[in-house]
Image (cartoon, rainbow, N blue to C red; front, side, top):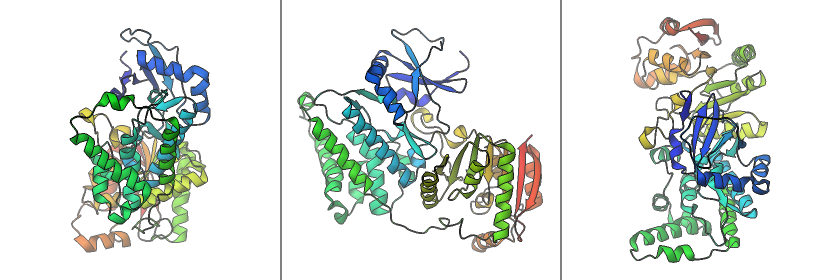
Length: 463
């Protein structure tokens, strides 16, 4: 069928393949996948997991597809995630919540004679601020005496990045993006100080684990059959999960102020200018009631919240400041908003990564929004990053067919500070040129001045 698209990253799961058809998500199961799904259906385990919001709603479908025939072939349909994000785009609190969700799910499974076969952070997605487990074929029946085979993967994907940030104040995001498997225990052990390692839990989960991994690599005479035959009590299994959960719950980051972390409270706008800006966003969102909206430079989500309160269904916020993203996520939880804030460097957005450069999709491949806000944003690319104005405008308008773009003139205090550091080398940066470039691919629906310095918000629609 021509309108079927298989998920490139699904190759890692030998039990079933994800594919898309008419904006829906399906999974074709082989014999092993059917066995696991049958176990999930038994005793209403899957139903209970869905009701408890542990896993993505999934069910068998009668929809037929023209595949090569496979013995005992089954196809299931999953609820579609609005926007797929990756761990290297999450703030500390998001990764922490994802880790706790993973552990709570695993503990519940062990109570119900089941377990998880992997510890991948990529199996967690967010619906707004709420984590959800998406790979139900990673759940299998528990076998008496088995140990946590995914312990190492969980540490690299969840625990180690969190410890790195909490103990050394080192952001894990670019580290994680450079190594899609996360932060290795070897690297974390080399980074932590002696004082960091005094903690019992960190000693056990980092220092001791690193020692055992090194010893295993060096030991050529290790008997894997003997290791696999050892019985590991379920009580001990549960105890390990609970201890790691307690460790993660107690990890916190130091409060350090960054340039934009309190921008929504302390900025260059006067109160009446800020109110005018909010009014424009409110009218824009009321007019179109977007199903999906991107808020570039979202900070703590002030304008995202306005859009959600005025008819928009889903908002994904993007910002370079991880403190702002962490605060935005906490506010999204506190106010129960359908708002997902993500770490985003617009001058170096997430690209296609992984096997054959298609396992993890880049930002532009996932940017399928119906509306967009780019408020006080474009000058950070044009002026701060020396990116030609035309390229910036084309980049922004390709994210959504409708949007608001705020143009900041050179006489604005913010840009004056930027230019004082590098000089005015931006001869084509002015409002007339901005308007002419935008008009090439879009219709300018309105222009509104919002500040005494001449900041102006342009509403565009793609031609």
